[in-house]
Length: 147
Image 1 (cartoon, rainbow, N blue to C red):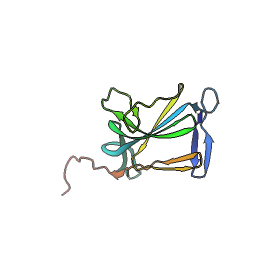
Image 2 (tube, one colour):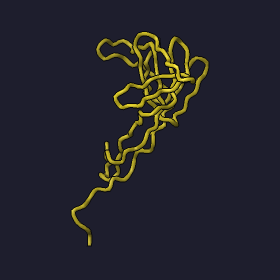
Image 3 (cartoon, rainbow, N blue to C red):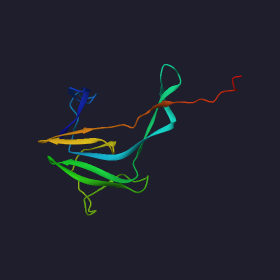
Image 4 (tube, one colour):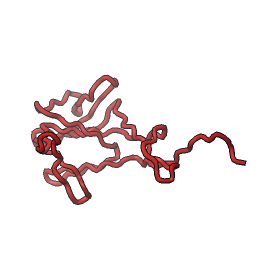
């Protein structure tokens, strides 16, 4: 089983607890989907104090396919995810396109950017997500021109 942890600072992790039971979240499989992330400058999500600069939404492009990591039964597997239709869930395949089975039980799917870093030290893995730069200048239409 895999326990979920939350990073509260670059140096400190704490157990991620179920708000109803107070127990740490646990899963039988963890799947990391590496997918393209792009800033959608048509969807502002937050504005800076100046009211002009904004943080925009990030579109996670979960169509087509891409690399993935599967953590199952205490091992890590490099696999591929495939999603050809928006009505489908991601399908997991090995290097020769055979379906990859999951361990029966709970599965977490986590998305991260294609440029995210992955590192393994002994049995511990670290995935560092790199977001696209999302602060930009929002240009609002004006009712007239200044003279």
